[in-house]
Each structure stands twice: as structure tokens, then as C-alpha cells.
Length: 291
Ligand SMILES: Cc1cc2nc3c(=O)[nH]c(=O)nc-3n(C[C@H](O)[C@H](O)[C@H](O)COP(=O)(O)OP(=O)(O)OC[C@H]3O[C@@H](n4cnc5c(N)ncnc54)[C@H](O)[C@@H]3O)c2cc1C
Image 1: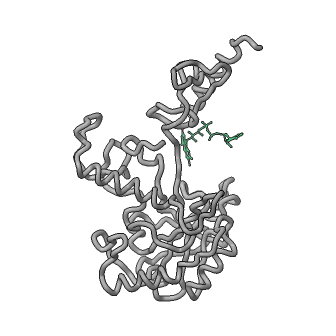
Image 2 (image 1 turned 180 degrees about the horizontal axis):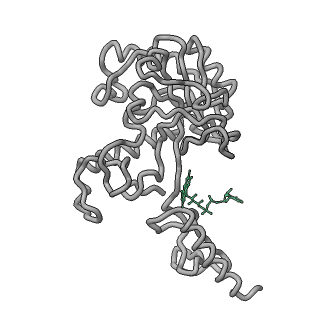
């Protein structure tokens, strides 16, 4: 479904926290603002050094600094955050797939996989990995001069502040629309993390190799939603040049058309793809004899 080597926004973790639409930073006055309730607070890639990321039960799941898109020179011109940034790259040359590149791709993909993984809060038959949260304290706010105020954050259910970690977890569970289970492990996770900081090592996710680690001890404590953005996909139904869906043997399935994000096999995404496919499918469909 994803094609990271081609396009970096296909599937990624946004650095814009605390809003339900983390893709762009729309301000009050924009037609979508009422829906999102805040513009979101963009901590940038480096901001992920200042927080721990937890899942719906309050457990860490990956090295935080490797979760968001990465800065730096790009794999392809124009896509500044692609995994593999900074590595020499010749477009369309298979020899790019050397071990450094593969390692970079592995880390990138697996942060997303870990973010979406089933966890202790998932119950059969409705498995659900739940929301993700950035947790940090007042010291992080002061270190970075973060202005956690409207319109960047608001009481929209995606931003929380409390004097204890227990209160923070309780608020998140009570208010956030997709937080379906209590964050039972959050207090334990924060104290375990603080132990790692004191010891200077993160045995679970090896944070120390990448970034400074900071205690989460100074109230108030904060929780901002972290969003995984699925921007477009490259997987889907197989079609012919008339947008007719074909089966596994390449035979047309009569009367079935597909286009846009629903079809696979295209190294492009977007509105142009959907419109052109729709035009072709519609033109073809009206010419088909009705039964
Ligand atoms: C944040 C974001 C920004 C983007 N920016 C751009 C951009 O700047 N330029 C660009 O070209 N592209 C952009 N894209 C990509 C572009 O929006 C998509 O490629 C395009 O909208 C796909 O159109 P589509 O009709 O194939 O699918 P969709 O727009 O996803 O339409 C599918 C529709 O099917 C409906 N549906 C799903 N299941 C059912 C069901 N069972 N029964 C009935 N209806 C159902 C859905 O509700 C939806 O309305 C962006 C995408 C995102 C997410």
C-alpha cells in the first residue's frame, strides 16, 4: 500500500500534535477550523526528542526520535523528508538498495507498524490499536519555549494538561473521542522512562544513540495526540486501460469499474488520478449495453 521509496508523505507520522487534522496548519477562519478545533502544535522532528510517545494503554512502542519524517537531503528531488535522506542516491538505480538504505527504510516503516500495532487494549472481535499520545512535562515546554495556547492547541479533546500523570490519563480516557480504554500503564511508563533517563540508557528502544533523554517530572504534564497520516496508497484493485476491474487471471469482471485510490499499480496519486480514472470509467460505462 505504501511506496516510501517514491513519495514520502504516503504514510507518515506528523510532527503537528494536538489536532484531529495534523496534515496542515489551518487557522481560525478556515472552513475546516470548527471541525479540527485547533491548528495543532508543530514540534518539528527535533521536538520528538522532548517527549515520549505512548499507545492507547500508555505504553511506549518505538524510539520516538525515529517516528516522524526526517529532515535533510532527499532521496528524490523535492521530497525533503524521505527515508534514506542524506544517503547517496541515483534515481531509478536498483543499486541504491544497499544495507544503509535498507536499514533506514526498515526503521522508518517499523515505527509506523509499531504505532499501529495491536496492544493490550485491543479486544476481539473489534481489534483496535487506538490513538497515540505525546507525553512531556513543563520543563520540556520551558526548554523549547513552546507556546501551548490557542489556536495551536485547545480543549478539542486532543490536548490535555494535568498536575499528575494519573489525572492526565483519567482526562484523556474521559474526553478523547477515540480513547476507548484506560491508559492503565501511563504512570508506570513515565516512571520507567525516568529511570532510563537517570541511568542514561533506554534498553527498550535504544533512544540514547539518537537523542538526549529528559526527565518527565515537572508538573503540569501534557498529552497531545500524535497522528499517523495515510495520504494516499499505491495498492488496490487491478484495472485495464478502461478502468474495468480485472480478476487474478486478467479477465474483465463485467460491470465493475474502479479508479483513484481504490486501484493499484500507479506510481502517482491524487486528485488528477481520481478525476481521469472517473472520466475514463464513466465514458466506458455509458457505452456498455445495459442488461
Ligand atoms: C491530507 C491529504 C491531502 C491531499 N492533498 C492533495 C493535493 O494537494 N493534491 C492532490 O492531487 N491530491 C491530494 N491528496 C490525495 C487526494 O485527496 C486523493 O488521492 C483523492 O481524494 C482520492 O480520491 P478517490 O475518489 O480515489 O478516493 P476518496 O476521496 O477517498 O473517496 C472515496 C469515497 O468513498 C467513500 N466510501 C468508502 N467506503 C464506502 C462504502 N462502503 N460505501 C459508500 N462509500 C464509501 C468514502 O467516504 C469517500 O467519500 C491528499 C490527500 C490527503 C489525505
